[in-house]
Length: 135
Image 1 (cartoon, one colour):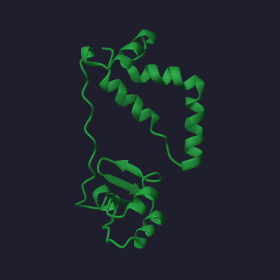
Image 2: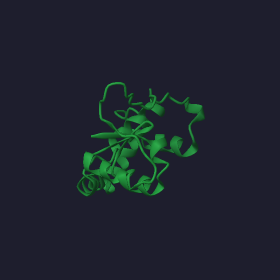
Image 3: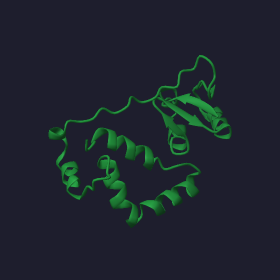
Image 4: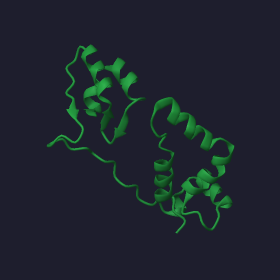
């Protein structure tokens, strides 16, 4: 696995559009498979690439979301509270429960087959639960 700083990749727009969809975003970094890193040689700009986990290379993690006070929730989020169940931890659980039966699970399977990686739905669900918690 290789890691590229997004600020470095931005100097080569054609590769930006090719690599972002197939890589894994980690804060300000893009983690890509070794074979995709070979494409970087087609860019006129020199883009530094590091091995995943290389010493001295900091992988930035996005900060954990802070809960938003309920009186500041957007209207569309407040409306979702109306269909919440007691076992829901937050808005993420409500959305997953409502969307799942109408294609959410099928989408997850399709996305993983098409792109060879998770769609990130579980991470988004947890982020929404942390931002808009019920307790």
